[in-house]
Amino acid sequence: MVTTFAPHMNLKIFLTLLRKEFLLEFRQRYAISGIVLYVFSMIFVVYIASIKVQPPVWNVLFWLIVLFASINAVVKSFVQESGARQLYYYQIADPAMLLLAKIVYNTLLLLVLSVLAFGAYSVVAGNPVKDAGLFALVLLLGSLGFSIAFTFIASIAAKANNAATLMAILSFPVILPILLTLIRLSQIALRVIQDTSYQRDIINLLAIDAILITLTFVLFPFIWKD
Image 1 (tube, rainbow, N blue to C red):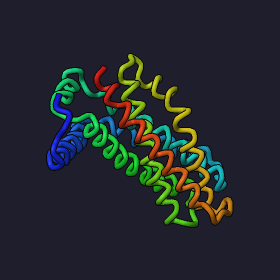
Image 2 (image 1 turned 180 degrees about the vertical axis):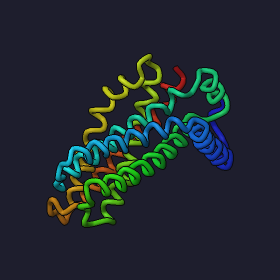
Image 3 (image 1 turned 90 degrees about the vertical axis):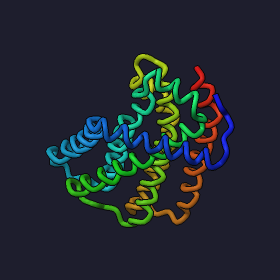
Image 4 (image 1 turned 135 degrees about the vertical axis):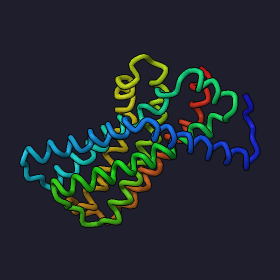
């Protein structure tokens, strides 16, 4: 396998792999359709329960919906790749480019799902968000953090027979600090709690993402060779 590429070749390979992710999604529309159906089903359950959702409960339920939708969306990242296709990628692409393409694609996918979930959830349970700018930033950071963590865990889980179950088990300790930080930042955006130093939480979230992506790029080539 060629492991070193010129910068323009790296960019070309990255864009090609990213385009491949979108093409696969459009060809397998049932996957994204199932995820969207799951999101709207969960929101519909809240609606038919006729519960007056207070802001703290609204916040927790929203992130639980996004969390489980993210798991369902990203688990297929490597499971859908056949052994022959993975061997082909191994021969022509640098593992860092393959991983980066999947992380970028999954981030965009999760961001779209989060926005859809927020729109539908706001219609059903109301919109208690007071600081829209901060909440939008939290959605972006949450999509990025979930994408990095779940993409790497999906690459490990794909080596096992029951990938979905293994992914759920492995992801819990990794995703918990990200989820707790996102809930806290969202509480500030909803004015559930008052905290003018929330920049520290944003820095902590970015630090977690940086650590995860560093570990991912260091360990993924060894997993990919297996």
